[in-house]
Amino acid sequence: MMRLVNLVNEKDEIIGQTDLLDAHRGEGKKHQAISWFLFRKNEAGVLELLLQQRSDRKIVGATAWANTLCANVAPGETHQMCLQRRSKEELGLIWQEDWQTREVAVLDYQVACEAGFSENELDHFFVTVLNSQQAAAVRVLPNPEEVMGFQWMSWELVQSKKFADTIVIAPWFNLFLDKPQVVAAINQELVYGHS
Image (cartoon, rainbow, N blue to C red; front, top):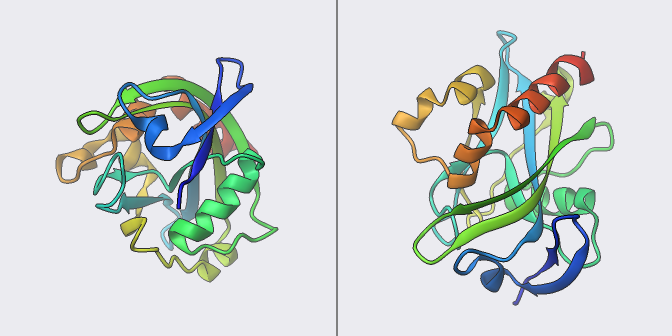
């Protein structure tokens, strides 16, 4: 089945559609995307981010680790609709109305991936922080077509990228962690948006 994505200009105005493969071929065509960072506090009170290992069937970032969810907005849906749809399709997460989720940043970026493919996205970043009751109810059920594995990792460790010595990080996730404005926006939401 052909999956279409929205092509956009620098102002995030939709200027057309193309299929997923075409959007990522070569230097990529600028398209709409979302990136989701789902957090919880573990039993010790440490803030953890849900990471996913991408399936070996992915066009870009195959078998690499990335933030909770990276997805392309389909024609006719909002960024929030995309987030809810893909969280179920990739991770088996049933969206809960009491999950407080905020958009914290927008990043226009392009990064080379596997040979002959790239990401070229106008990406909207969303942050969700689960309280202990919400986190206890979460059941991650990855779709093997999309996700090979997942783990909760200390946000402090993720930001330091010290874990990158033992696992491969998706090129765009590496780029996100190197962008002070992205990390600062996430941290600001963690401190002030969910206090």
